[in-house]
Picture 1: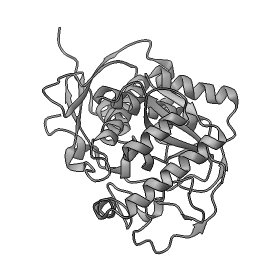
Picture 2: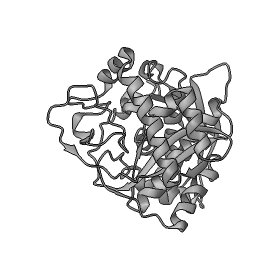
Picture 3: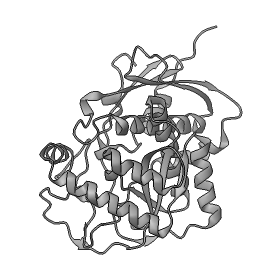
Amino acid sequence: MREQKLSRHQIDVLVGSAIAAPSMHNTQPWRFGINGPDIEVFLDRSRALPAEDPTGRALLIAAGAAVFNLRCAAASLGLDSWYRLAPVPEEPDLVARIIVAPTATPDPDLAALHPQVSRRHTSREPGRPAALTAEARDSLIHAALSEGADLSWLAPQGAQDALRSGATALLHGWADHARTAERARWIGGERKEDGIPISALGPRPTVFPPPVRDLGAGLPGRGRSRKTFEDDPVLAVLSTAADGTVDRLVAGMALERVLLTVTQNDVQASFLNQALEYDDPRSAVQQLTGRPGFAQMVIRFSHSPVSAATPRRTIADVLAPDS
């Protein structure tokens, strides 16, 4: 039987959706190979963050989010998808292989989420705490569980404790010249392909600890106003049972499913992950959930203005030459 090749339109939709996934500092650390109906996802380690992400955890979470977007795009094109994470142990940069095939019954849940891929943007703007009903919160817990991760809502005191853990980590980060230099490479200024331009940084918070990560702190930032953020943020912790390569990829898929689901409800999300970049604060954040596991993301949910979109690399830039 002849292997069916993907059309140029299908490749553009699939890969174009994948590169819309979130990544730390918008480094977009991925490459893609197309071979017949197979799509391979590789890490691009030239875009790693060795100072702020020395274990590569954020690198893998970003790749997992891209895999989830690929699956949503496949369903929107009337394709079934099967995937395997870290399929070849001898090739650590090959993090996923997805096979797609035409079907009369594409996954309706994945297809319904695909329109949110282009709508989802990290909001670094002040706003009101998200008024999420118990049903809405449960739907986000289910979204994470369906991908193999846990989402735990923090009580108000737990949220404040998480902010304090983040603030301690933030102060450590400001004193670390390697981290500051790394952020300067990716953040601020006018950017057209990657990184976070000043237009998407949002205002400087007037309170400390802030309920949003000020990525521009310590960097030149003329033109950024100062604004007051909510002092009672709605926070949740995304965690996994273990902390290996596959677990971190699973966390990325679960993260993106949660983000696309909440985008359907016109709620914005941002991240407070600085505490997770250090072992002790990361363990402390996980303890706030009252459950065993490994914290992978701290997510703030709010009713905020939509932030400016961050730029994306071109499809040609992330595709293998023979794809």
